[in-house]
Each structure stands twice: as C-alpha cells, then as structure tokens.
Length: 417
Picture 1 (cartoon, rainbow, N blue to C red):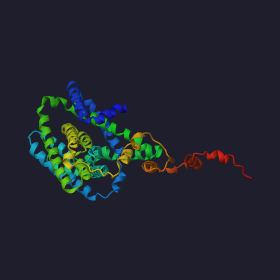
Picture 2 (cartoon, one colour):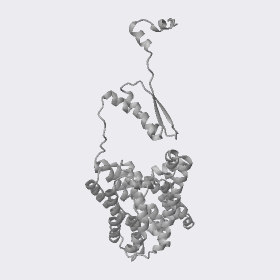
Picture 3 (cartoon, rainbow, N blue to C red):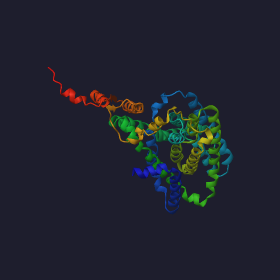
Picture 4 (cartoon, one colour):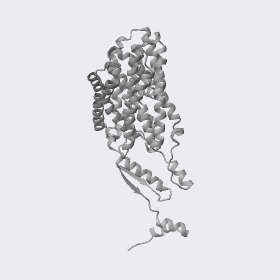
C-alpha cells in the first residue's frame, strides 16, 4: 500500500492529470452527485498528513526576518492584486461561470504556500528551514485573511459569506493542524524523536498525495458533463492560470537574484508559487454551495500547471541562480580519496538505533583522524559516549625484530628471587 502511495506522490506530474481524465470519464458515464459526500473526508486525508509533518518550532530559529517579510508581502499584497486584475482581464465574460472562475483564481491567490513548498525547495537545494517557516506563516495568515480579502475584492462579483468561510477554514485548516500537532506530540512520546523522524513521519505525506489525486478526480467527475458539453472552457481557464504562474516566476526570480543569496531566493520562489490548492479546493467545494463546483474546476486545473511548472523550474534552477558553491577543504589526494570513501551514516543505516556508547579503535595513523571525525559525528547525533582504544605494541617484540634475538624467551627463562 505504502509503495503505491509513494509512487503516486513521486509522480504527481502524471497521476493528477490521469485522475482528472478518469474523473471526466466517470462523471460523463455515471451520476457523480453521490460523490459529494466524500468531499470532507477526502479533504481531511489531503490536509491532515501535511499538518503532521509541519515543524512549527522552526519559526523561532534562524535570522531570516528580511526573507520572511519580503515573501509574505508578496504573498498577501502583490499576489492578491495580481490574480484580481488577471481575473478582470481574462475572465470578464457576461456568463456567471466567468465570475465564478475569477473567484477560484482569487482563492488561489489568497491561500499561499502549501506543504509542497518544502519538497520543491529541497529538490532545488534551497533553504528548507526558511521554506518551513513560510508554510507556517502563510498557513496561519492566509487562513485568517482569505475570507476578508475575498469579501473585499470579490464581494461585488459573487456573494461571499465570511462567517461560513471562516467555519470551513476552521474545519479544513485549524482542526487538522490541531490533530496533526497532537499526533506529533504523542508519536514522539511513544516512539522517541529519532524513530518518529526517521520511520513514522515519512509515512504520512503519501496519504496527502492520495487525497490530492482523489479530490482532483472528484472535482472533474462532478463537472464532467458540463466540460464535455463545453470543451472550450478548459482553454479559457488555462490562459489566466498560465499568465499568473508565468508572471509570478519571472518577478520572483528577478527579486530573488537582486535581494537574496541562492538558497534563500529558491525558498522565496517556491514559498510564493506553490499555492495551497488543497485548501482552496476544499473551501471552493464547501463554502459556495452549488456554485462551488464551477469554482473548483479552475483550481483543479491549477494543479496541472503548478506541478508541471515547478518541475521545469527545478531543471533550470542553476541557470536562474547559478550553481551551488560547495566549500571543499584543500587536502592531499590520498587523504581526499579516503574521505570520499567513508560511508554516509545517514543513508547506510536507515533503521532506528539507540546508541549509548561507541568504541573507536585506532592505530593513531595520519589517516585515522578522518575516522575519528566520523565516530564523533555519530556520537553527536545520538548523544552517545565515544571511547577510543589503541593497542600498544609489545616492546620485547619490537626490540627482538631489531636485534634478531628472541628476547621474549630470554625474559621468560629469567629466574627472579
């Protein structure tokens, strides 16, 4: 089961479009209305695993105030304005569906930074700690600001019930966040922090990917008959989405190059472009009644563009920000060879271990100093004591080899007394 879920997670670029195609076929052939009852449980499956892996404590670490401030200013001032005007330009038709798609585009703009931010920042070798903070800040601020922003900007387009939106956000954000933090607490208490981080926590994200795929299937199946009857709607929706992501990538890349170092700039880019489509989709399908299905169609299609563009951006990340500058200590070739052949403890021992004492045997040679660093790094990781042992050569054997006489026999034959 976990292998299948991991496959889905690693191949979202393909699994999401495939699930949407199957949703389209199912919704066209069958009555998809009974599937509406699964919206809330599937959304919980989608959001809860992200909350379990969210490290809230990281917001108190590091000195990246400027990076976080610039990112959130872009997230909550520039992006809402951008999606609002893109909606005005590209979704200005007279039919009600255009106004609903504009609301969907705006929801994407006011709900920033999904858990994918951390993953894509890691893929691009960016600052993951900063990315985690962006997710936490974006999640909390966006959840509180979304109903207000939607009412102010889109209130004239469609009636927005702020109280109802707040209730839906509480169900789909704060409740899973609370349950996720409780899961973290009791999980670490039962299994220990090491086993939790290495063996238990990695099992949750694949379930979130499953939720994403299922919700995409659900959104398409519920609108299948309308889409097949009006295939041009897909093109109309994809144009403003493409414009939004294209402008975002260009401006964020320029801003990152001008203001931040490579790792921080990458975190900022993905901290903005990886919108929280999961929560936006959940709110669309529950907070706007029957009209929510039309809104959800645009958000479901945004998954395709968001993941595809992120994958391509990572491929060209070195062109955007330059290659990583690894600091390599200058050492002689024989020593360099020995260091490079030392195994990586993190990757060679995936199982959970509980080390208390480490015995390090050494011959005190020049190359042994690399091994002692390795032993100490393991000791630091597991808070274990490192004991060194060195066997002193037999003095008589040393002298015997130099003189050609077996002094051991002579000493043993000595009579004392």
